[in-house]
Length: 113
Image (tube, rainbow, N blue to C red; front, side):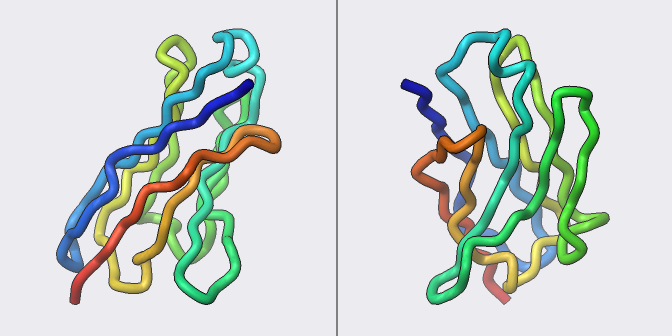
């Protein structure tokens, strides 16, 4: 059973920064071979892809966060991170970690104007 646990969310003023973390309860081998993603979902909206990192460390970020957010991974620690800078009120959402078809429970990010 794969478990993903997000942390690092909170309340921040516009222009501030947060770093989200996601810990995976899988083997190092499986983790290192997996594509990892961060999604977000605001109230009443569809879940949207924020960023992805492949097993070769190729990254892709949504246009709405490009230049502000950075996804990274640590295969030894089995962690995936999302560094979020220059936060905007429209970044407010629950952020979810994803590995294959597994999801964490999410961490809430609230950006005040």
